Length: 116
Image (cartoon, rainbow, N blue to C red):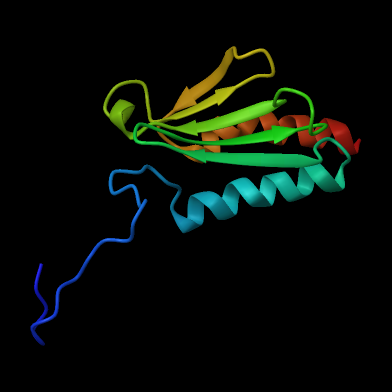
């Protein structure tokens, strides 16, 4: 690709052009929930993974364990059962949907119980 000044634009080495990620508002919503769960003493660590097919956010009670909850965004399922999926600690699907708020609802309810 050439620029108007006659130079060439090169892509950054190692960059994945077809990578799925979270939009700013989606990430803010997820991290807001994560922060409240940390304050309640439920979670202590998190991990994010960005691949060609999906992006996921995993929350851990302790670092060495498997994630207590994992939220996955898979845009290829947008027109089917929804691109958002909430997985439980043992990999079971807890909730699927088209809206992030609805998928995070079971975790929000758990937060209310943790505070009471």
